[in-house]
Length: 268
Image 1 (cartoon, rainbow, N blue to C red):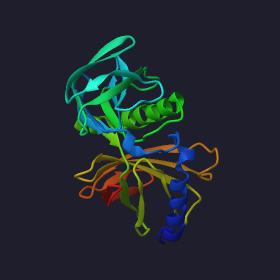
Image 2: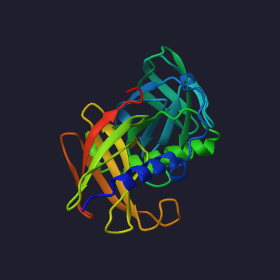
Image 3: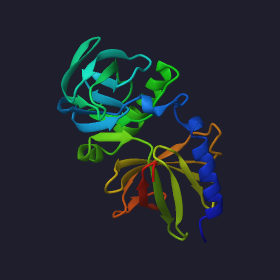
Image 4: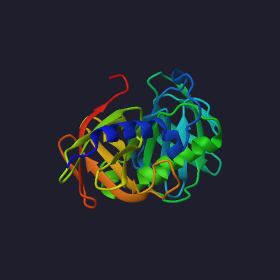
């Protein structure tokens, strides 16, 4: 028996195209060139260095500090980044940074601080979504990425690489199950890819996140549903699989193996 490759391919494309239904929305896209990328280092937050159009620094005592080099809903001007140390003043706290800068030279910095609502921890998260219709849209997306994705990663992976970034890269995966031929799924990092086998109606949902682009190391969040993808049936979490082009990852139950076939930037 073999995986339903044609069905899987069509279904996966449909799910990726409708991702805004399944994950927090990011507002309407506009001219992405208006928001410079920033690079931030903050040893006190356990952040060696992270880049993004937005950067979130995490500290259990101080909460989440959201930074960007352009205005955003809820943000306030905090000063200019010059590629050196800087202290960010937000209501209730002074947050010193070891370094903050941009490839575009000196840039103004906007900042806002938010409390943790669920999991808390140290580290840093960068992301490249550009524009937001409201503060609620932005904060909902940030909390999803920080609390439901980054802080849900296996602890050893966050210790291994505490800086985490969600960009616009494409990830290609090979998924195998004993008794079935391998099938291939490709989609944007953070998107949901889906597959189904002939022996049942269960749909497996795979959401890849790039941990290290140079080595092709990827974390895949796996869940399943016995209903249709777009209905309100609860999605059952099955765990994380860590894989790369050199290291196959395994999900014990159901027994799936995942190999990374490639990580590509949006320009490739």
